[in-house]
Every structure is written in C-alpha cells, then in structure tokens.
Length: 307
Image (cartoon, rainbow, N blue to C red):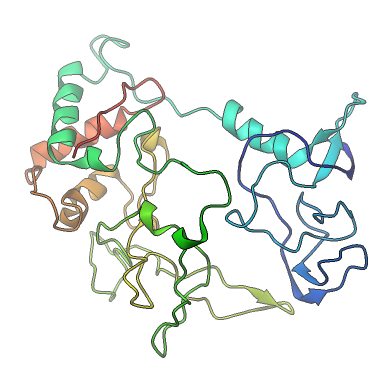
C-alpha cells in the first residue's frame, strides 16, 4: 500500500480538485488562522492551505483557487522512496494517460466492412451546413476551452441565488461562467410532464445532488442550466467535446437520449433552439450526421468554426 504524508505545493498542471466532503457543521482548526472549515479533513487529497494535515482547506472551489499546486497529501508508492503530490499526479494521469476511445473502422481500415469514407464526408458536410460546428469545432470539437488563469475575474462569475430567485424556486448556489453556456432548449429535456418532450421521455429531472446533513438527505435543489433568478444569465449548458462520443452513451446532460440518433432528431438541438435554419430535417440527413459523429475520435481532422 502507498504511504502518505502532508505535502507542500509543487509543480503540476491545472485539473479538477479532489477535495473533502462537507461536515455536518463547521469545525475549528487551531492550526489554521482562517478559522472554522465546513470540509471534512478525513476525505480527499487536499489539506489546509497552511499545510496543516489535520485540517481541511477552508475553500474548495475551482473558481476561487487554482487546482494545481495546492497543499495536498504526498504519496510514496511501494518500492519507491520518492514522494509525489497525489492530486497533481492524478491530474497529469488524466491529462496524459486517459486516451480517447477509438471510433468504428472505416473502409480504409477494414475494406468491405468498415464505414464508407463517402458517408463520413457527406455527414461532415451536413454537420457544418447545419451549423453544428458553431459549438463543436477545432481539434476538441467544443468551444468550451479554458482561456483564463484561475481565478477568473469576479465580474465574469454568476450564481442563480444572487440576485435572489422568485419565491418557491430553490436553485443550487454554485458559481458558473455565463459566457461558456449555450442554450439549445434542453433544460428538463425528455422529463415526463416537464413540457420538453423527447422520444421515450426518459430524462432525469434537473436537480442538484442532495446534501447530507447529520446523515440525512436534504431536499435536492434546482440544478444549473436555467435562468432561475431571471437576471438574464444561466440558460444553457457547457458544450461537451465530441471526441469519442460514440463510446459514452447516454447523451444530453440528464441522460435523455440513449443514442446519437435521438440527439440529432431533436429539432431544438439541431437549430440551436430555433436560432439557425434546420438543414437536417430528413431521416437520411440525420443518419449521415450520426455516422460522422460516431467517427469522431483523437485522429479526426479538426473542424473550422461555423459563424
């Protein structure tokens, strides 16, 4: 088993924090001048920003603090005498070791049995003609690429709790960056009785994960994706990458679609919620786009952005 010890900030690439879970009530920490923390020091890789191993960090928020180089547990693997910063090592492993799933073979890779190159070329052309490449473009097939050094400017951040939402609406208070959101009319997509039908209506209701307080589950709050407080921000979602999309069903943020054909069949999605002409209304056009989507992997040539 690896051994661990308190670590100090070291070099590393930005990534997603693996922080401790919440405590039932904030706990004081004599070693931390920041005072009480609501985070549990017994869970997660991050420790207090003072370096005190017995305390959790008082702030675990990717927008308030950079993810890399924070005080964290050092881990010494079996057979080694070199301690490594655990969180930074995990981030680098995700960045460099986790590869994009391979797409189905084409006819050039599997003659006589693969997907015809002409089919993929037609699908790619339709994908661009339909305006899909206005959100899914470049080598990562998404416009959502971090373009700032943490933390972002405070003026760029928003929440659905400030200003306060109308009575009876209880959104989660998480921060988000509105400029990265795109609205394709998919909030509560395919949720039975929610007024946004799709296919078999198997979508999960848009609720945030319930918190545990003193071992009891709280009432789930309304999830992000909708402008709950009516301040003109918050409608839409962060655009996902299409790399390896064939291998990761179900689709849409709430699992409303089990297949890519379901995604492409949604007219709101095809037209960016009615803001673009519908260039793929026929079943044949949609099937060609689906074939192209299934072919997107790490070796797919990048797409130019559609205006």
